[in-house]
Amino acid sequence: MTRIILFPAILIAGSPNCGKSVLSYLLTTKLRCKNLSHYLLRAVPDGEGDWFLKGNLFYVRELRSRSKGRYSHEYVQHMCSIIDHRVVPLLVDIGGKPRGDQFDVFKTCTHYILLYKTSEEYDYWISQISKFSLQPIAEIRSSLVEPENIIEEKPVLRGIINGLERETEKRKEGRLFTALLERITGIFNYDQDFLFEEHLGTAPIPPVTENWLAKQLQQNPYSWQPESLSGIADILPEGRSIAVYGRGPVWLAAALAVHAFPGKIWLFDIRYGWQQVPMVRRSKKTNLDFYSPPSSNRAEMVEFKIKDDFLDPWDIKIADLRPNEGIIISGKLPRWTHAALARYFSERCQWVAVHDANKNQAIVVYSISDAHQVGETILLANSS
Picture 1 (cartoon, rainbow, N blue to C red):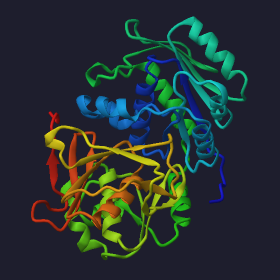
Picture 2 (picture 1 turned 120 degrees about the horizontal axis):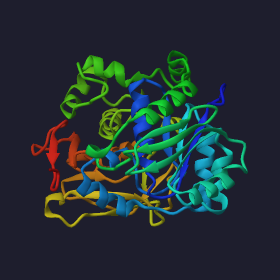
Picture 3 (picture 1 turned 135 degrees about the vertical axis):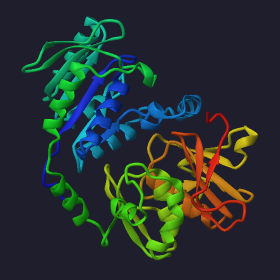
């Protein structure tokens, strides 16, 4: 894809436990509400994501503990390539302890926001950031006890921010957060129609947008409901290749991928552009491991984990896995990986479901069994 505009990439830097992940999540949530195209890229393999900050705490903490990765050289270069070839503006969460070639991520960004707790942390981060040509947006001290306060607004936003708590009931959004959001809004304020046409214009075949599909299904495109999956067969021809544009839940992508099988399916990925869902191959040299949680309530669940920190989007290799009747696909994986696994197991199982970590439930995306229907919700243990 030829990039016409070098979109901004805002580095969000800060030491561990200063609220950086919560701030990133709050910013991207508000930007989505403003309908501003962007992507929050977590350039650290720490197992966190939106699902961790809004999902069922019991399960997401358990899943995160098994999803932590490491900063390999290959992983760092992979992240740098994603940022360098961005197709929308980016927020880049660098993680709390970069070292060595991990600072290469700084080179690919255009701006920075610094979050710190102590003057020592501030001095350290400024000494690192000053090595690169990044434009400052904000330098903010994070506190759980001091009141929020704006000390300086121009040229750099400085002050104290409060309320960056993981527990939703403790989170606060005060004047400083609002001022920061306004600054980022101004930087990310590209014409949305232009971005939309640019993305659709590069599709390999005439694309289907999730918004259009939601309208046909009389469904809210910002709050997809599992039961809407049963109506896809009435809207889209089965077994035909499709290209899908949108940011719906992973179980929607998986259901569309199975519906299109054996035709091809392309998903628009903010990191790569149009990405064809790859075939899954059985191999002794795997890049996806799998794990079956011991709970009897999750007897059919298989949790997949990316083996080497990042997954080649053109090749998925797993060991031989033969579920009895059905499978619940789980794990911190890209949408196209869920889609690929769903297609793979639809040839080997009577039913396939995808785990929704936000609510710790599973959504059935394929079934030829009387036991489950497409669009059915399977409640799992510890979902309260």
